[in-house]
Length: 637
Image (cartoon, rainbow, N blue to C red; front, side, top):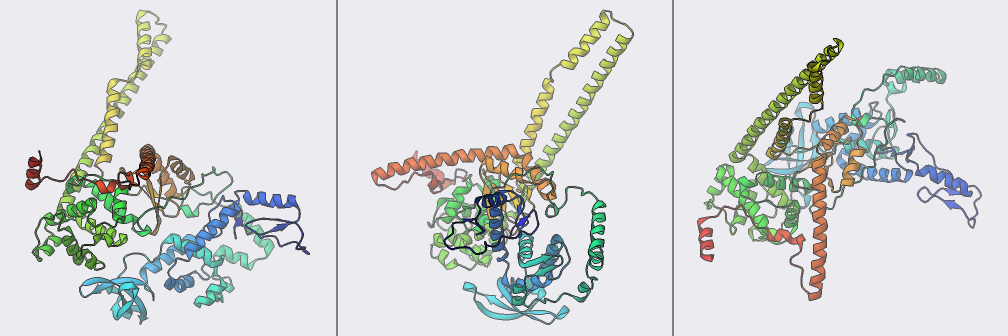
């Protein structure tokens, strides 16, 4: 149940001797019943005040109904914890005296280091990496081994093996810190010490008897031990004394430790990000990675720009030979072949032609899938039905291709070239800043000297013509407008800053919020993307109002949100301009689509010139012209 000013709040019992035919007033979301209308209004007004806190996530400044919704959503997230982790995690929670942050870190570290029954991992089998699941832990200590089941299609166990810990590969943490934090709050009835709900303890065999040292007060921190051993009156006196000796908190601190106080500025309500992606939620990261790489290295790949929406639409389309996807695959394959690395050797063993064409690209795709042990749906591609491959798998293949492309010599050289250019631009910018500083210092010194000369002239009573000229000269210099040279240097500095941004090819998140969600902005896309701590969920903000609300919701008392706010403030103009530009384009597209739809409905034809199908009309204008293509063009002219 929601907390009232961070303290438990109990609902009212129904009135006694209530007649079923009696007319009463009922609060919709609490089901509380009132005979008196004024009492009902007072209660409703209390629920509408922003004094409520979500008991699960800890979010504050909510109405009662918002806190209920927050608790429901947090409870749903807590249920996403893998079932095989329930017992070991609850064991670590039960009767722990750590604070929430320390307990989360302890459990997270333990899950990273230890292996449990039911965990799904990877291991090498027959020379290739395959998915497996721990069925049984055998032995303990240095002699521990694990019976694993190999996972086939439809997650079925095909066979078993006994492996050592060194043979098992864990690609990611079984769960994130944010989920653990929510799970701890949702699964406990008390937080000092933490006590697991009785029904969970019985279900997963968690001991319900507190440790002996805790019963005697020995397992508690010193302050709590003194309170446990003393009388209530002594405890009250000591508590007041401790409060008087509290050292003021020095901000910023870890975001999850920030506690709201009365004089805090009012933070904006953060809008939930949009999640209307066409690709699966778990594949959005792959989509962004592939698109950003193609945009950053388009000249190297000889691949002209395309929008993120076009790539998303093309990936979800069921047609096999879409020009956009064919051009992307062909460009990446040619890059890997020219690098003469692992993929080059793999196709040489198969006597492939070293030039990928728009006709044979699917054969090279099958070769790549075999090389990287992506066996699922390879027969579908081989039969010429690439369009029927699941969207998730299409993006997984492209992500693997980009990973291989990043390691090529050509990309590394391009990165080194950009890095050298960045270094040179940064050095030039620092030099301009140094000269500006020296110039400003000289101007101040000259002005100070003139002012002193003027004061001395007045003190000496020197009011002759020369003195008037000196005073006039000083006044004119003081009121003179900035020099053209200063304006030119300022313009040059801004130009260098833009050049630095243009030369950057490495996209990094702007920062994280208090729950470790990461925020991404891509220069060629008018949306601010949000990636949750587990990298399983993505969303985005696409309006100036949403951007402003996000910035206004960040609490600068926290380390992460302070840093994130600084970055958002720094790039605010760029992000706002990109967001507004995209919004205009989307609005224009919707108007055009509506007009096309109306026109096509009159003639009973399918709207082929709709902007939403622009990905079907992609033309690679940066594609190098071969002799054969050039001769065709010459004949055409």
